[in-house]
Length: 132
Image (cartoon, rainbow, N blue to C red):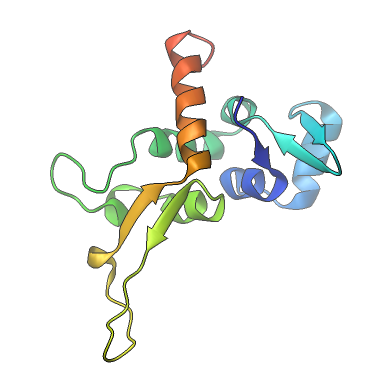
């Protein structure tokens, strides 16, 4: 099972810490204790929150360009949340002579190791019919 930290879960849910704690207390979201920290199951976030489901669906379909040639920063509305959650890594090149960052159409992105784990985990659950 792929596990997300509290900060990663909050980035996907677009919830603050109080709302996440409240959801855990109500039993809507389970927090699994790993040493001093708690982790969260992406499949539970998928079930509980439309915001998390939207972000995770975009992660499942993530690619640098769509079939129509649209750049990923345009095609994915939740890419900043995915980056904040550590599921994608964005490369923002800087012009060597001026030190100015290139515009978004020159940016590139890739799935992180955690992003790949989450994708594999969710794809397996979807194939098995555990998620809708």
